[in-house]
Image 1 (cartoon, rainbow, N blue to C red):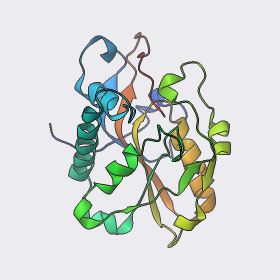
Image 2 (cartoon, rainbow, N blue to C red):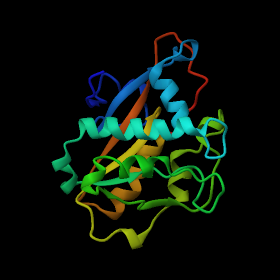
Image 3 (spheres, rainbow, N blue to C red):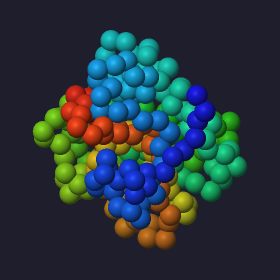
Amino acid sequence: MLMRFTVIDGALLHDHFHLAKTDECYFIREYRTTDRFVAGESLSLLKNLKKKPTEIGFRYKSSAIEKCAAEFSAVIESEALNDWTFVPIPPSKINSHPEYDDRMVQVCKNIHAEKSPDVREIVKQRVSTRAAHESAGNRLTHDELLGNYYIDEKLTHPEPENIAIVDDTITAGTHFKAMQAILSHRFPNARIIGLIWVRRAIDNNAAISEFKDDS
């Protein structure tokens, strides 16, 4: 499979209704809302990546982390790492919680790991929340997310000029927009983009997938 980034442009915005035309978001893979009926590779990989650290089958999570990092490495030129700061979207649990999941930190650190990419958890959560894929019908809103996020000032120096918000998946774009808001307020001169491994594509007249993601 040839890896490349695809931009979420005007033709795809209807799948991600919180995004604006001016947002820069790029993805590698996608799964469709009908994939709950088939063994879609991208959806299976995503499910493995999201396994809890305490969950049976955790070994599949490690493989998914490696694959995600490898695919990001395949589409990001190593020379570009000198210009970008990778900021993973924080997981639903804070780092003191037994189910804290640093999967996206691990992914980011392994994007051209030999180049020691600039990976910083600049945005963190004040309190743990229920994972979005476990919260059907009761998801956090943009304002609730923004109120729970804070900037870890210890990690803001040197100030980044180009920020890539990195996440495993995107649906409405709620988490990306909350991250974008807090980062652009703190770093008003920075270019901010989104890098997504798997996006959810909505098939016309198809039911929304039972699998819910964090974004």
